[in-house]
Image 1 (cartoon, helix red, strand yellow):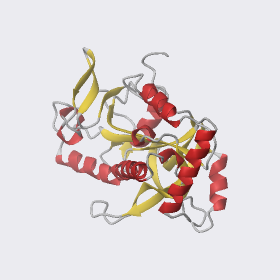
Image 2 (cartoon, rainbow, N blue to C red):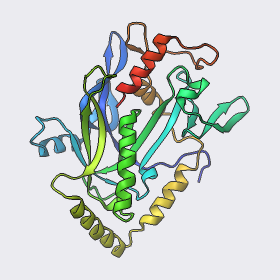
Image 3 (tube, rainbow, N blue to C red):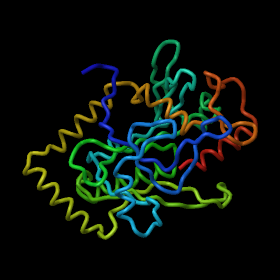
Length: 306
């Protein structure tokens, strides 16, 4: 295996709750109140819809055409293999990750190379004062019970989605007796409002048992699925171990082609008029302290992230 190349789950498409639109000659992220499933191909108008997008919309008759739930299964039994989440800070000109950490330790590019250093979290880190260090989560799911190891990926920098998904995955793994990959689940879009969001709705992604099933029924179905897989020779433990080695094969899991899309959609820079721009200096501010406006803008962006 080539060292330095992260071996991540094969991706068939994307799941998003927003899009990038062009305004005044700039490409800016725009939130949405529904899911969209796309392929990995885009044209001048954006990402091309995946055939499953229309299929799932037709199957949902209670959401006025809006896709609010997606039937999924997990690829792995281990929660941390399905959901990859870290604090990430990027150099927006080179597209290189400058620092990636978990709140305890980090891997950081320095003049001496990649170093392992303490990670105090963005609020207490001098390198993160620009507000561009965010939690970045990637959830890999199998959509609509496709019998393959190809996944759809949902990316987010929102605390609400990451926290909720991490909790659900951990709890479902525990109560099912380590049968997380066999449970019939669904992604569900939820909304809430807070004082910091000025009472407007913000949306985040939850993971629940599929509609029409109780938790007991879902666990019973998972046991039957696990038994069937064992009889046919499906080695779930070996799959999890192979994924664990693949993720650990590189210091960073990001691909060069993924980072420009990531920066455009999730790491916009605030402008004087309260909007966002796509241009920023190559190095984050370390010696210059942010103004009160910068701090408030940064806090508002974190709250509004899904």
